[in-house]
Image (cartoon, rainbow, N blue to C red; front, side, top):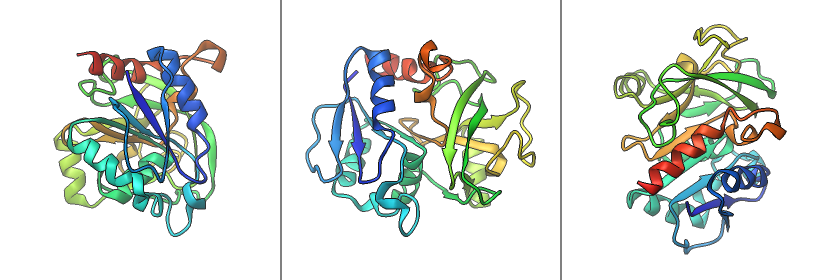
Length: 233
């Protein structure tokens, strides 16, 4: 799988993502600078976590207007796969490539902790190595992860199966009002969504930080294995 990772000023999770991609695909990803206007031949583009442009204006707002994002949009239109994690999810919503917005956590505090995610749709290129209702652990680290969207769009996301992951308890029980299991207060406990064609995914927790037993577990590995399988097909 030929992957590229976009780096903006303030990005700080590109190394973690590179380790995960290389671990699963056996191939080192390309590092793409935010001012690049020509993309190499790629199967996957990743927008990793961090604090692009210091989170000025809104998280992801300035990065959404970086020169490379014009090429990322065209890449998506051609059917390329895009994964946005944490700040990457925020950027995807700011560009309009995914609906909704990420607001301040309900607690108004930065959260750095493990959480549990339940797989809502196992028929996407990002989730195919799981089964529906599987539960896995993932670290989260953000101050603006409270996913919100208008009622009509929420109905569309739920009705079309575009919710990929939901925050849950370790046994898979979803309780949107429970701050223990839905720590940032996201609407319907939504932790990750996909685009209408299923090829763009945004999520707040960090699956790349659990892909090897040396990291404390391999819970996030199936996401990257799913992508490799999708590209090979």
